[in-house]
Amino acid sequence: MTDLPASAARSTWNASDWHEALVVEAYAETPTARTIRMRLPAAAALPALVAGQHIDVRLTAPDGYTAVRSYSLASAATGGILEITVEELTDGEVSPYLVRGLDVGDRLEIRGPIGGWFVWLDEEPAPVQLIAGGSGVVPLMAMIRAHEAGTNPSPFRLLYSVRSPEMAYYRAELEELARVSPRFDLDWVYTRRAPSGWPHAPGRLDLTRLAASVQPLGSTALTYVCGATPFVEFAADALVRSGRDPARIRTERYGGAEGG
Ligand SMILES: Cc1cc2nc3c(=O)[nH]c(=O)nc-3n(C[C@H](O)[C@H](O)[C@H](O)COP(=O)(O)OP(=O)(O)OC[C@H]3O[C@@H](n4cnc5c(N)ncnc54)[C@H](O)[C@@H]3O)c2cc1C
Image (cartoon, rainbow, N blue to C red):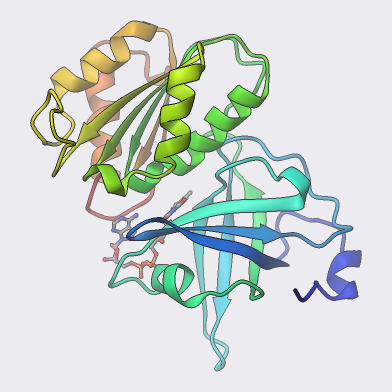
């Protein structure tokens, strides 16, 4: 495998500068999404990552045209490796290349980490309710992984809305965690097709399902909602209308018109 040039390895990390990262692994997460793992320059002094942050990725065409998109980090940068998961939007400019065009050994320009609000800190004492639509689960997965790697005893609960079982990111890891961890619970919402025998008909997240999922952790839980804009607005508005303190609800919108 090609390594990064010595000039990249010598660079000092500045979150607002662009840096080259080497793609070391890429695999299908679902039929339409891909997880990409990148290695940073060996000697770069990357600032500590906080679960929930994102990076910017910049692509440059041969004619100099550039496109920049944001992607949440799915985990801490263990061993200098950054992980993102990208959903392909067939009419998109950047995501089709990241999902189908990029190869292991290619380099990507990135900057970050970015974000200080939609983050979870290990010293946070409150229970945490996570609500994800589709690819919006990525930063929440970083929080779940950070929580599981640490000793914070507060319970975490994830409500994850996906179109169908095979469209769920990190399914095996999430289901295994929900099975073995006393600190993590998981609720699925299937919008188009549910597994056979599932007790609920497929359909978008509604007030009943939302209320049932958030009720166990109580109204003081710190809540993170992430996904396409209409999904996030529905969930956050419903929580506020049900009496939740807006200051306890943190949202991140990925844009677009489709939810999970
Ligand atoms: C903070 C932040 C973190 C993000 N993290 C992730 C991530 O972890 N994984 C990920 O896959 N994406 C993530 N996104 C979305 C990502 O930045 C791009 O917007 C997305 O990949 C589409 O880029 P594109 O160039 O392919 O499409 P574009 O060419 O920008 O858009 C193509 C069409 O798709 C629509 N569209 C744009 N975004 C979405 C969307 N999210 N859902 C549905 N339709 C959309 C546009 O309105 C347009 O019609 C994040 C966005 C933000 C702001």
